[in-house]
Length: 121
Image: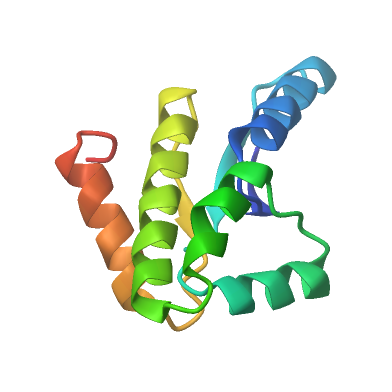
């Protein structure tokens, strides 16, 4: 059994879901975290309102100082997303699913960074 999660922005909910599924199922489930690259603070806020996702404090602190600077916000968001993915993979996530949403360059940057750090092969 395998599944891909809706996007989220901190490891806790994913780890809780995995633990819950392990308790509930006789066979282990492969739950792949769905990752939305953070590249635009305003777009992220609108997206979260639309889909009901929450923005964790750590992400808010990383992005708010750059709300008016699109280049710096993108840089901070990509760095946050890469570190978030590293934490998930180190915690045992079997891989990641990137919701690129027409942002293939951001997705490629994230995958490249994770490959270079040895988190993805």
